[in-house]
Length: 56
Image (cartoon, rainbow, N blue to C red):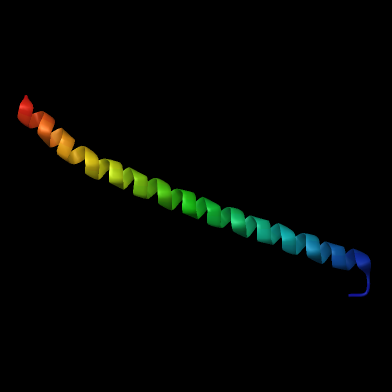
């Protein structure tokens, strides 16, 4: 790779792939956090609903 254009293309392509991989990992982490949050809210809501039904 003695051509500077080839080197710059390779670095740009590699950088783009690295940024895309980081964004994908971020999307997976956000989705996992969202699923965990939804599960925790559901687990906390079940006893509250049970108590409200008992009061009525």
